[in-house]
Length: 106
Image: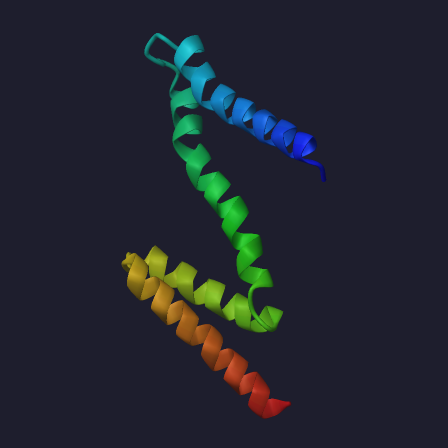
C-alpha cells in the first residue's frame, strides 16, 4: 500500500465518521416525539455492542464448548444483576475450568 492510498483511506474513514456524528445534529433539530424512533435509537448501541462482542467471544477460546460455557455463565450472572467485574471474572473462571476439564478428558 502506498502512502497516497493510505492517506485516502484515512480521509474516507474520517469523512464517514464525521458524517455519522454530524448528520443527526443537522437533520434532527426538533425533539423526537415518535415512541418507536426513541426506542429504536435507545437500543442501537446495545445491539451494535452485542453484534461486535458475541462473535469475538466464540472465537477467543480453544473450543466452542468452553466459549459457550463462559457466555452462558456471563449471561446468567448479568441477568441476575451481577456487576461487570464479577461477571467477567466468573465467566473467565468458567472458561478456564471447561478448558481444563477438556484437557483432562483428551
